[in-house]
Image (cartoon, rainbow, N blue to C red):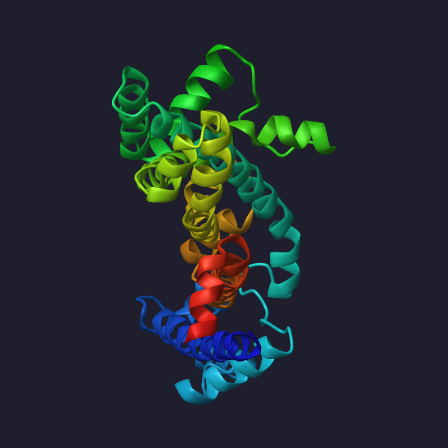
Length: 317
């Protein structure tokens, strides 16, 4: 187990190094010059002013030197200074992070609970109308883009019926849950379809195994067979997929936060891209990579605890 953890950590460090280099290089390969935004009023632009701005933000240094300075600061928690807000990037991210984490957590609860429930129902009722209805519904949900669903939810439940607010975050736990309900539904719908399909497929495979047939032949009630032998043995792949989907949701919040007027990491990224705020873009993308690697590594470590077969195979290797 220790060797496996060390191997995973080494892979994370290598992935993080490569990702950080790609993120930093891609920003400076993008069209546009941040100096034009930093110098301010174009009427007061002089060669001396441009040179001073480049020196202040190390833009006069070679690309490798700029990357080394940025990476050294990122390791110590200094992600630079925002061109647009003239504030520490780490402070901007910490201010916006609770909104995004709350939205992703809410959406994760929705698609995990409903996705597993629908998938289990479809697997138990396979070949019947219930199975067909769930399959058709999840297929439709997966085919609708999140921004289209967000607009539809705002129009129906926010504007026409007035059941939910369409902007803002609210104050207090219950108010925040109320404000985030529509964004969480829009973010979770596509993921719900994925989890439902994975749950159904893994449970159908478990139903065809010999130990399930033996349990039924021994007279064990069907509900106990489903719960103890089918659903339990299906949790490994399902939990793994839930973790991967949750990690990938950080990028999906860009559209949802913009649609519902939420001040989260996604909205910060869009604003930074529009204003050529390179330090903020680089920091947000790096945080997304770190979050994805952290979640996937955690799922990889938890998977053997959920499925003893994985642990046994690992010990044999």
